[in-house]
Length: 127
Ligand SMILES: [Zn+2]
Image (cartoon, rainbow, N blue to C red; front, side, top):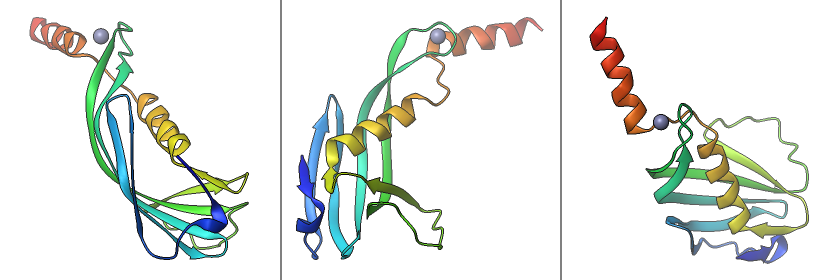
């Protein structure tokens, strides 16, 4: 799902996309000619790799994310920690790309499968 930046409506507009088993939904609207925002929710399950044994398993995600979108380089001095800043390079807001990059950053976190967690507990008991 893509929308041209200048065509983003001023009023909050609903969107919903699904990738594999993760749902990405919420509202988006334009703040100024160069800024837009997305209030969104990610929910579902996504695949990650265990950092110990490498097995792929899925874990649930249920999180609210606020994005600030800038058409071009984001130049504001105010740093709002609550917001994820996205610089749109080709004047198109691409929801699939946003979802994809969010899932990539979730995947890059440290994940341990249940099996390895259990083994860790066993080691601790032996001590
Ligand atoms: Zn593991």
